[in-house]
Image: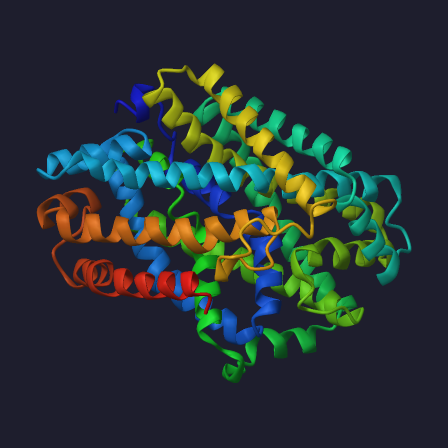
Length: 459
């Protein structure tokens, strides 16, 4: 196969692709974002809604993006253009891929900042700073980090250097090799954390919180957050999965691979909840503690458990590894676009992409501390009271991803012939294909349009 952008690169095996795709999907979106969004939106009621959207919307769209990439054999923009041209449609549909690349770049700019938090906490854990910390000192440590822009800038720089190192090595030697080591280790560590939570935490309260639904707390906003979280966690609408599809050999099953990615990604998100919330309830913390929940809860556990200094160090290494795998996936899509559309080789392209994201990330860093009360889009209902950091997160997770998902569904569901879809998905024209086609044409676009309308109106 030619490979995206004519590089000739592809995944070496189904297992390699699966781990790389899961590595892109699994990251801070599961371990950092999911627990606090869950806590802020009613616990178990949100969990069930999230699972419904992940399977009913996330899976069909994941199949769609990978299929477009494998058929187009190019960057996100190029793949949409190629498929459109093959169907006699306007090449302007390439703008959907470009939108995804822009979204990936926006997320990369602040995601690397969050990833840097884990590097800082690794140092804290390894040096013994977390030993015997209580709720008050744990909160003070996290607040101190957010209010130290030079330290945040240092760690953000370190994350970007790691991204550059991996992506310059290419698909197999860089992205795939890293995922084969990091993902299994992350799963093992999370399972150990769940076991520890069952022994030393309040697992009974966690089970009640996660598995006993209270639908009286469900609002339209809850549904919007669930869809946004599903998109953010799985990685839909960012263009990177289209590029991952372009690296996929023709004999790989798109449907089976996509299903495995969804199940593993959701499994990590749920495991993260069962790992974190027992400690939240045990130490009397607020489950609606926001984005810093994991950085205030786990340090107390590590500070009091036997061997916590060693285990905490290992955990934060793996946490940055999970975050890094997502950052790599985000950057890969953008670098691939730069290589194809600007004619800049990968070795230089990754430097330009990382440098630009690093510069934009400075605004997120400042908004965590000195500019925390600066709300640049306060006149827009859905952005009211959001700092630069929060506004970028909202723009990506609740606006751009949903627009991209809706347009992808319309394009592939309505404008691409049935024969082409059957050929690329390697499916028979039966129940499974009919169900996927029905969802992608008649269910997903209307739901996303309604959610987008609600987001813009500030519901």
